Length: 155
Image 1: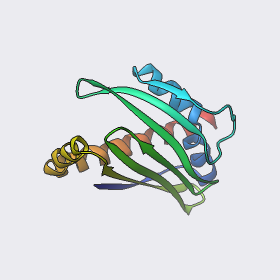
Image 2: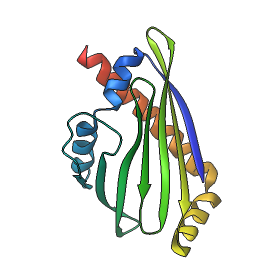
Image 3: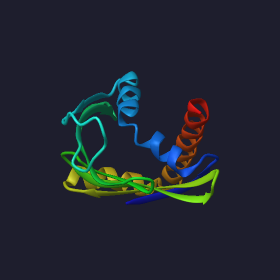
Image 4: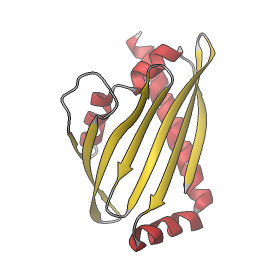
């Protein structure tokens, strides 16, 4: 299953990239929401190979996920690979400068099933594809808005 969305952010490319590559901030945000996050590396600066163990409740059950930073190209691209018992996937955030003060944020997510239970989960998502797409686009728009706010408050 693939999901994608584009949003424009009223901020320079470099500032948007700096905001979205602040993994410590995302870790703290997840922990505040009740998600257990454990960084597996001690690097302060983002680099390919950074990894996290994540545990969250989804549909009433605790789910374990391993995330790994698979691509990191300053100012343009961040990609993460994820693995759980039943699913695997990749997510990619690309940035494109539209003007000196405007940046396009493109988010793509691909999810594949590894087991029968993963197939069932993906099938239920595919049956509700329009609702899932709408929620995904709303979340990306919300993320872009929060990123824009973070950039404007740090300036």
